[in-house]
Amino acid sequence: MTGPSELSAREIWIRLLLYPSHTLPTAAAPVLVGIGLALRDHIFAALPMLIAFLGSWLIHVGGVFNDNYELLRRHPHVPEHPELLQALQSGTLTFTGLRYAILTCFGLAVMAAPYMLSIGGMPALVIGVAGVASGYFYAGGPQPYVKHGLADPIFVVMFGIVAVVGTYYIAWAALHPAAFHGLDALLQMPWDICVIGLPVGALVTNVMLIDDIRDRHFDAVKGWHTFAVRFGLGGIRGEYLALTVLAYLLPLAFWLWLGCSAWIFLPLLTLPMAYKIWQAVSTLDQTKDLIMMSPRASYLSLIYAALLAVGVAMPVH
Image 1 (cartoon, helix red, strand yellow):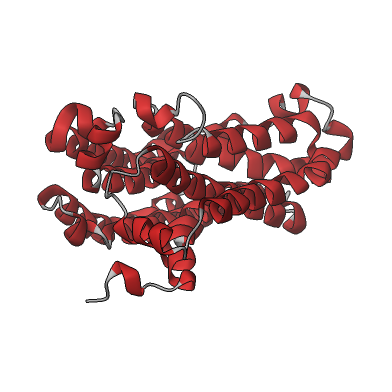
Image 2 (cartoon, one colour):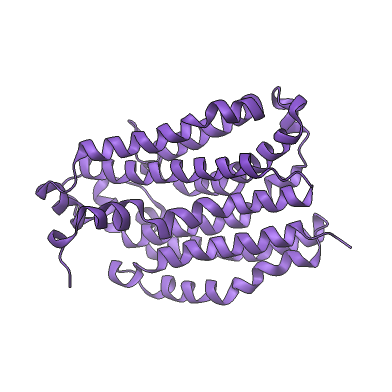
């Protein structure tokens, strides 16, 4: 097996830090739902939505970089990522390089602010600032919110509501240039855009819960009060199952009470995939056993979101 000292700088940055099989699907999932809602309401705007996705992904990646930076800086004695510790010792990875990467990600996201502000006004700016804050303060700042066990609800809200509403809003504002002057624009949005993305928010949060199961012993040493640390394996597995059940029951609620067509049940096609992941989560708890479950759960959220977007966009007859 390849040892930590054999990893190249490219492998460290791409496979361990950028982690595209994790960050790309979870960043894209809520954007797809927003696109589906926009297509339903005939307000699709390609360029603003593409920039919204790139900004979402950059913020997500910047948050992942910052998480690893803070872990290595504040807890160098915790062998959560031995490859990164080895890379620091050998000079393949440096704190300066990590800081530059974090600033680059958040900086590129901020560079889109003038364009988004010109289209969507202050609501677009507020949504962007909320995204950057949630990415940075996950593990950064004097009181990281993950330390206080707040990551789970924040992830549900950010990926299930804010990212979806932000994607829809920027498309709506691009086609209604006279209506970007404040909160009134947001109040004109259909209210269902705040709930349609909740199942995706639940599934994206489950990706983090898998990591929390794997890292629970390290998180306890770091003083992070995650659900796994506070309530043990039984507690976090219960939370994972509850979020999964919620994700697969919500399409029924959308059909019954939001007037969606039967196409809204398309995401149920992912149930076999969700069940296989649950089988692993409910029986395994070691890093080597769960290491592949995080990307699989990420792709589950993406596929579910794509099917949900199609279901939402299909007309009701």
